[in-house]
Every structure is written in C-alpha cells, then in structure tokens.
Image (cartoon, rainbow, N blue to C red; front, side, top):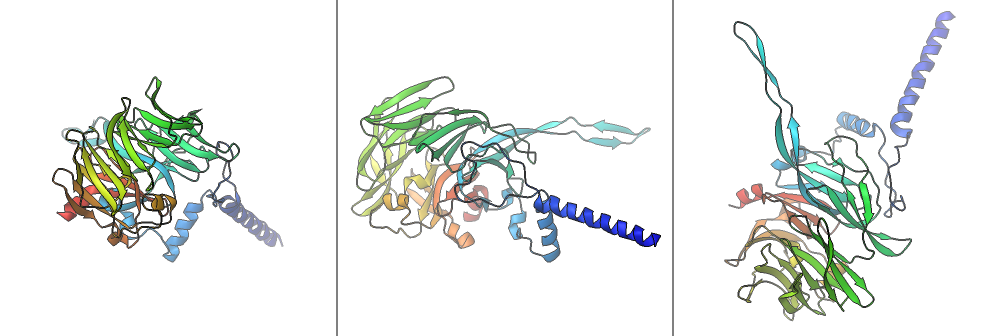
Length: 439
C-alpha cells in the first residue's frame, strides 16, 4: 500500500512537470515591446514566437526530416551568388561596418619548462546589412558570415512605408501613415549598439520631423539628407547636416522627387507619362536635363553624368546626359532609372525587364500603380563605351520573377541589395561570384 502511494505521488509529480514544460513552450506570452502609436499590426496579427518554440520546431524537424533550410541555404551569404535576406516586406536598408574584438588565444610552448604564450586581442571589421521590417518597424542585422538575420531593436512602429539608415548604421529615419490624424509622419531615432545574437533594445532619442514629407533622400556619405514638404502654395526642399536645417529650394509646384548624386541633392518633377519633367541640382538650381515626359534621373557622384529614363512616342528610353558637353546618348537597354545604381562614375548596374510590358497609362505610371510588373535581369552598363551586358540572370537562378527596386551597392562594389517589388522581399547579389562566372 505504501509503495502504491509513492508511485502515485511520483506519477503526479512527473505529470505536473510535463504540464509546466508544455505551458512554458506553448502557452506563455512573450513580453510586450515598446510601441509608437497603435501597437496593432495593420496587415493582420502575426503569430508571436513562443519561448523555446524554435527549439521545439528544430527538434521535431530533426526527427521528421522536415527541415526547411536545405542545400545552399546552409552556406554563409559570402558563398552564395543570390541570397534572400528577408522574406517579408522591407522598408529600407544599408551597409554598415563594425569593429569587433577577437579574444587572444594561449598556445603552449614546450622546452625545458612548459610556458603558455598569450596572443593579444585583435580587431576585425565586419560589414553588416541593417534593414527595417515594414510591418513592425523593427531593425534587423545580417552578417555575410552568418546564416540568418538577428533582431537589433524592439520598438514597434506599424506600417513603415520607407526607412533610411544613416551615419554608418547609428541613425534611422522612418515614414509611416498615421491613421488617427491622416498625415504622413516622419521620425528620426538613434539605433542602439548591438551584438549579434544579443537581446534587442528600444530605439533612443526619438524625434519627429515635419508632417507630410513627400520625398526623402540621403547623401552617399549619409552625413546629409534632404526632404520635400508640399504646402498650399507649392513646396519646399530642406537639407539637413549635423548642425543646421536650411531651405534649399522653394517652388509653386507641389510634387517633386529628391535624390542624391554623391553629396549633392537633385530634384525632378514627380515622374508621369503625361507630364514633362526637369532635373536641377541644389542649392543653386542648376539645370541638368529636362523637357522629358516620365523623366526619372539618377546622377553619378560627381554630377558629370546622369542616367535618365523617359516615356516617348516610341516607348521607354534610357539615356545618359553629360554635364560637360550637354549631349544625350541613348543606351542599348530599356529600363527605368529607379532600377539602377552607380558602381562608380562610369559604370551602372540596372535591373532590366526581360519583356517590357506596358499598360494603358504608360511608364512609369502603370508600374507605380501596380497595374504591371516586370521580370528583371541584372545588367552592367559601361557609359563610356555604351555597351551593356547581362551580369546575372535573376529569373534563371530561381525561376521566379524579380521586379527590382531600391538597388544599393556597398563601398567595395562586392554586394548589391535590392527589393523585389512584387512582394517586398529583400535580396543580395554577390557581385564577386557573378562577375567571375560571367567572365
């Protein structure tokens, strides 16, 4: 009788421990994160991660063979030609470098007596990709030596439309639509220092810029930024450095787009197939190129050359204009300038549609409105010779269409980031690998 009681007590204890473990892994709620405005997800509530849930999933997958990470995805990004960094919509990204300390190691040396020689700690510079998740506003990091992104911040800003990370990954600007006031809000904040794999932290020093900023751009060094604010009687362009905010342009027209060529801001009328546009450099309002319908312009960092696209009676044209000669030369590709990024002062990388479909409104209107999409390949264009060559067949790599927007290249011209407009996912191309493969 006494033994039965002991076994009964032990059985109840084991059952209780099992229920506690099940509750911990599957029933407990994660702690809440700091939020701005409404904490709800405007695109629907995603299932929160459970403490230990990833461990359970990995354990089950290990037993059943349902591991979703297969083949080349187990390789670090530096060993893959095309890498999907994030499979959800992203709002903005940048390359940033960090110095990490590598601890010294001791090595035994034998002789008449055993002595341990301690090497000094060394510093190593690692290039990270920092990006903003569009749904939550959380900032993540990604190392090309790693296999997966890691979370840096936990301040929730739902529905970020676009984001700009500046000053080597220490500052961020985010634009989002405030449903309560029906205005576009822009905030700036300091990104906390981070260690890969550590817990995320809140954004610091949050401040607001003017409401309803319609266009925003950051200089190549990320030390300057400019933005357009429309008003009742036109619009103004403001440029900000580390100390001052200055009005660099005012116009009776309300719709302008701002971009940077190096450290110089340029403005162009908002592109439409129905309107002629012109491009000017600021702050002296120097004419660059103009009188073109559907004009989109992308100056190089010296401002000597500008890559542009326009909508003409014969369709889409992509061309180069020279500040020195004032001449125009048509390129042997047909793409929108917003699908391109300068590698240096002469060479450009562009996403070029394999089939140039057009809708009823013309370009870029149909593309902006989402009534058409493209399947791009990556081209390298030499503006000096006028030659264009396929650098990488994106569609041939995975069989899925890639509609390139927001291309960005790192300082060493070894990595290209872009967003697939079709679903907002973020990708990276290893230019070293595709260059060697194409030669």
